[in-house]
Image (cartoon, rainbow, N blue to C red; front, side, top):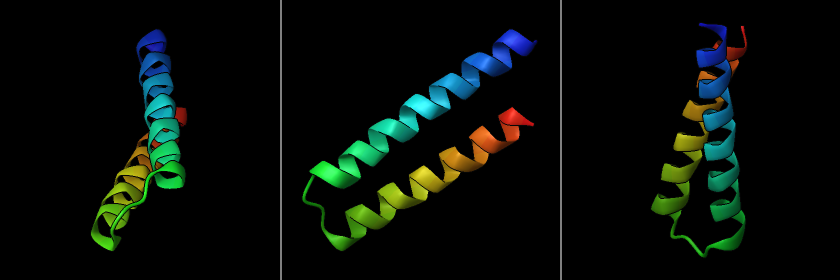
Length: 52
């Protein structure tokens, strides 16, 4: 069970890195930026929960 949580946490962190990269590199309209920021916040919350 712990291995499963560690795998989920690793996937969340990878997804967060991808979202952060998009936020830095891509020219986004305000709606696109907000959408990615919401996605990043959800991933951060998931990662926090998996880490507990």
